[in-house]
Image (cartoon, rainbow, N blue to C red; front, side, top):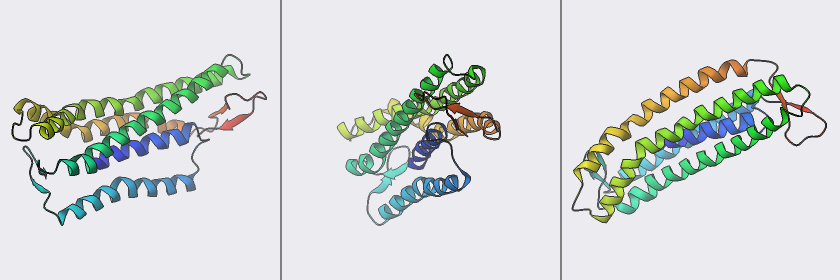
Length: 213
């Protein structure tokens, strides 16, 4: 599950690079993909194997996971990193939104206003769809966070309702993220293949255009 969250951060970073940082060249994308794979697969896998050599795994209510007696391990190696990746996703999307608003402001002053309006509309829709990852995170982790906070506060008095809601919502993350991923990228890939996707850099006075995708 930590891998899911790291991949969300990687997707948000990829969107930021594509929209704000003048696009992604094929060679750069390959390097980014390697880094994304190491971060999303390698780090969680390494942490999981390191913990195999300890006595932290065991009965955890509805799952076999970190035992309730190891609260610091639960939060330090899972919930805190998951929350940090969520904040990172939000920060990157805010930066993208600010950039898109800058592009939108140019539609009233730029020479190629029709083209820029189309670019702005596409970017706004893309950012809105990417926001679905944040909605999924909140839906899938709200009860999980509440349950683990309750476990830490009252380890000997588990709440059936919290366990039930966590069991019903948290496993949905992968499927819901997959739906959003294919929906977003089905709309995005045709845009990458177009040859005229350039916009003026926000704040430039000479109307200089930059290749975006």
